Length: 277
Ligand SMILES: NC(=O)c1ccc[n+]([C@@H]2O[C@H](COP(=O)([O-])OP(=O)(O)OC[C@H]3O[C@@H](n4cnc5c(N)ncnc54)[C@H](O)[C@@H]3O)[C@@H](O)[C@H]2O)c1
Image (cartoon, rainbow, N blue to C red; front, side, top):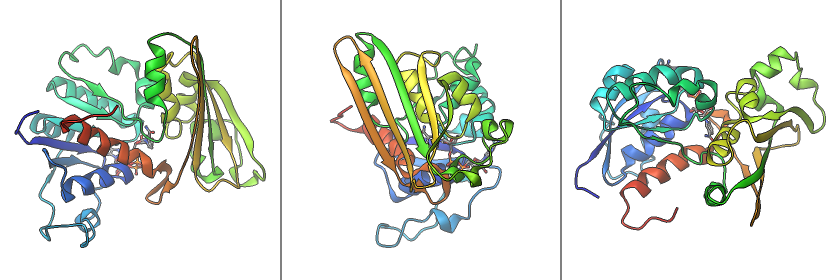
């Protein structure tokens, strides 16, 4: 640990980026939000913590810049972009040798060249648990060998709108009247079919036995209130089942409130004297 304040840059100030920005503006010891990037930045007032939480009434002090200046100016970059915008960001982050907290884990499956980027010498990529639980156990089990890993994600139909698989298969989400499986395949195929919806599957695959061997089901359920995920991971010495039900983020129903909190939790762990992982 050091006394140096780590300068944070957030790329993507939508539902997740804004929630992390609010927490930083409210105050996380050891960090300062200095820069952000967004094609259409949210109004500054929306980033102010509620008066009951805040010790300051000062407007937030940070600059909106392009990815290049964000990577140059900041010590640590937080990615909260659509997955297709991630390679342009990682190019700049790697060129400046900075570390990256990356929430759009589907991007690592869609654009595998990110991980083998020739300029990625000094940059660590940290993938948060996001909307998923149980990754601590999966990582431990991976040390001894995992035989199989499955995840089933269930969402209200409207949360899947706009996904390439829905468009390609001409699926009418409004006509779904009962819980229906819309996709079954491996995590690599799932990331291409539902890039904004299966980050949890991508993250599970990266923590476990890889995208090709991780089985994914995507279900639409008109009765579902939120997004739920069930994982089943089997190894030689343990069988794991974990299930989480998340409230959708009101700012983006495809995302869950838990995802932004997982980034905030990582920031706190990175500077804490006691860490439980
Ligand atoms: N790992 C997980 O469990 C998990 C959970 C939820 C969401 N996610 C992912 O996190 C990412 C962010 O989610 P969100 O809900 O905040 O999305 P969002 O749509 O609310 O926000 C994305 C923001 O990025 C901005 N943007 C788009 N293209 C840009 C570009 N080229 N340059 C700069 N800014 C750009 C948009 O203006 C928007 O403000 C998504 O990829 C989502 O799929 C991951």
